[in-house]
Length: 81
Image 1 (cartoon, one colour):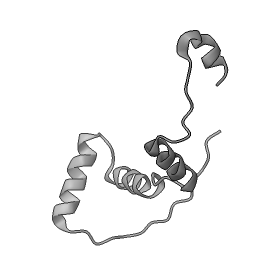
Image 2 (tube, helix red, strand yellow):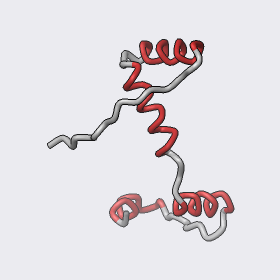
Image 3 (cartoon, helix red, strand yellow):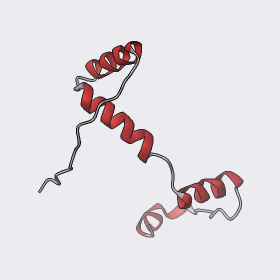
Image 4 (spheres, one colour):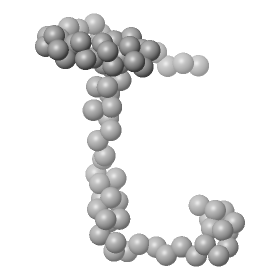
């Protein structure tokens, strides 16, 4: 069963150059301008990593406390996940 998302009509003032670029990008992806702009805005808002993800990224970048994986027995490695 599909979830119904409430939408509200709104308007924005955009430069004509930006609007043209958005229209071209939407057409290239065979999408409506509305769908293209909405999904682009959602990506910008929802793709920011949360605190837990940022901490994990920092830990991985530091190289500290990383686990060593023994891949000699790959099947047991996969089943342990």
